Structure formats: structure tokens, C-alpha cells
Length: 234
Image (cartoon, rainbow, N blue to C red; front, top):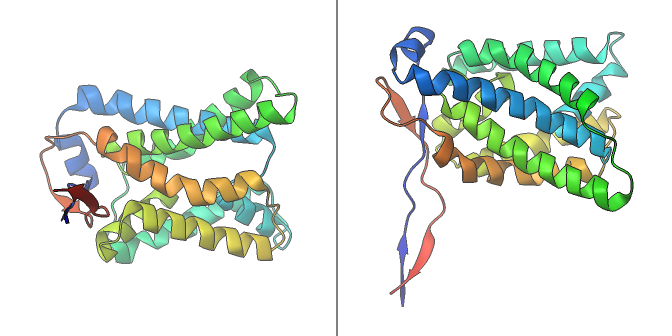
């Protein structure tokens, strides 16, 4: 017989903007925030350079440009604002990370697109895509773990985790697949990289999040549901 042992719960911070600054450990948290955001943007540049499919949210943005006579960037901003409105019933707080997300990620994407060489050959493109997806999951966990507030889309994920009690993996994967479906129906471009990101980013964020969360903060936290149980021989 084997007994079931559940892994420790992941504690997701729910601090208001003032408490985010008062929570302590700023010497670690501020560099962690901006390192995570920069790597997040850099990883997006890696996926763009691989040219094997847009991430689900960008599939949605591209699809909407077929119906709205505005630029891709403007669509991204509008969608982000709409997603922020969904934070209200989820009781999510914006913060320095929410604002910085808009600017730092955008700059990092541009730097990455400029600096990264264009891969030649399918093997190189696949390798760059895989590295980009993995780095994106790590970077998301790092900046969310700094407890300075998530970006609009990641805040939707953390809010639903806290309100539903489901795991980060389940919620993030569900969001990505739903967004992908809508974007595809609107005419957005889908590739193998799109599907890989949609099904892989949730498990990756959940894998890295325990290592990215800054412990010992002063303030209120909310526990997500426990991770799936692991069978332990015994």
C-alpha cells in the first residue's frame, strides 16, 4: 500500500500597494521584481525570434486587430485595461510590479529582438522556442514572487487561484487555452509554439513559484489550494 502525502501549499501574497512597500525585504524584492520583468520580456523576444507561433494572448491581440482599426500595441493596452477591471471582483491589488510590467517588459522585448540572432534551421528555432517558454515560466514566478503586484494577465491568474482554490497549473492553463480559442476564432495566427506555451506555461509557473516567492514578508497572504498529491511508498 502507498500513502498519499500532499505537497505544501503555495502562499500567494495579497498585499495592497502600501503594504507591498511595508512588507520588508526590499533589498531583495526590488531587484527580483525588475530582473523577473526583464527576463519575462527577453523570453518573449526568444519566442518571437523562433517564429513558430505567437503566445495565446498575442493570438487574441492579433485577432482583434482584424476588427478594430487600431494598432497591435493599442489592442494590447485596451485588453490589459479590460483584464484589470476583472481584478475588482477578485480583490486583487495593483502595485509597482503592475505599472513596471507595462514598461520594463516592452523595453526588454525590443532589446531582445534587437540583440538575439535569427536562428537558422528548424532545430535552432525549436531550441530557442523551448528555452523561451521555460524562461518565461521562471521569469513569471520570479517577478510574481517579489510581491509587488502582478501584471494584468498574471493578476487574473493569481486572483482566480485564490478565489477558486485550484492550482496555479490548472488556472493558468485554463486561461491560456480559453484566450487561445477566442483568438483563433477571431483570426489570430496559431503555431506549434502557441500550443506549447498554452499547455506548458501553467505547470512551469507552478514548478518555479515556490522558489520565487519571498518568504517572511510582513502582511496578509492567501493560500492557494494544495498541489496535487504525490504517492509516497510506504
